[in-house]
Image (cartoon, rainbow, N blue to C red; front, side, top):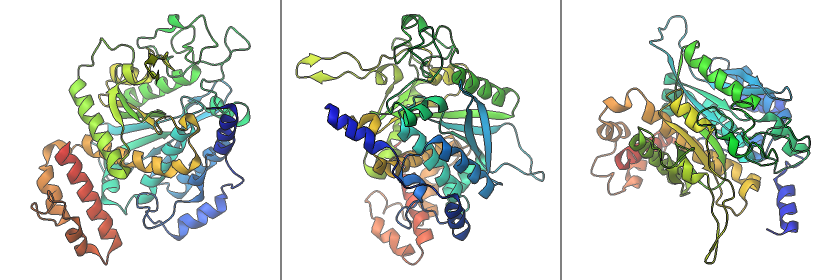
Length: 432
């Protein structure tokens, strides 16, 4: 990309003069809770997702979600950044009230983003999926079931200092803003600072490196707080973390453990690959986007080819990854890193027009993720169930006779959405 093109792409990625008016959002929420984001054919998304948003807008928006949906949403803080900013999150789920009995720990899915400051699309996507699930509770049967059974913790910005810095100083900044031994080279890579198979020695002499892992494991304060919060959730908070989706950009890949080595294989490799392929199918079903499913040790290394010449990797893979840590230390058997779009045309500078389409991709993946990890998933005859529930004959489905099924619901858009969901779930489970 030439200098002028890069400057133009950077300028275009910043938010326009359109701002989010909280009073307008509150009015629209109270007026109608349409499933706007999970069913875009019925309504346009709210203004919040028409642009990338700074922290000064994101945190109040998250608090507003708690205010508007207090029975479903809790605003929480999982730690504090190096510069003193809160690492904010939303806990979304229908927890049992005093008249209901909670049998065992509450199952929890984590959807995180923003470890690398410049990957704005990951932050917007987490917010999009959170909003979509919150506003579709009680409207979409599949989402209602998901939030009845699971808590989902959405962490849009694990690196708030770096994220703020990309808005004020350097759009392509990657690391946090922690001081190092070199005053002119700040920052530690949050994706390399965890203590499982930490290999910081390979980069410890170069704080200027974009993948600098620090001088010791968990030196990056944001990573340490995230790990402490997760341990406390499982040890003392009566929660069982059963899934992790850590969003990044770019290259359209679904990565599973391990990141630290390609010679070591996780003991549940087959399950990881199967679920990863299911996530990829869910995304492809939405808009035909193709995501490659591969081990993180391979997928984190991008090698470019120019004719017959192979260029050096853009970013080396290595240890100290939260993906490996959650899988190995917390025994989260379904841990994934998803590298969102695109495949390099825009890279980290994905235009704002891609916020909603990318959000829709990941929304489909999250719904599939929850359905696959549901306590009832392994006990039901899924093919028969989904055919019966949708009112479609088993003979009709393999031939793709969807129009005949739609004849049953032409006068009821809500019912039509449910049939679309059932066809989608049936198709994924049949081909998964």
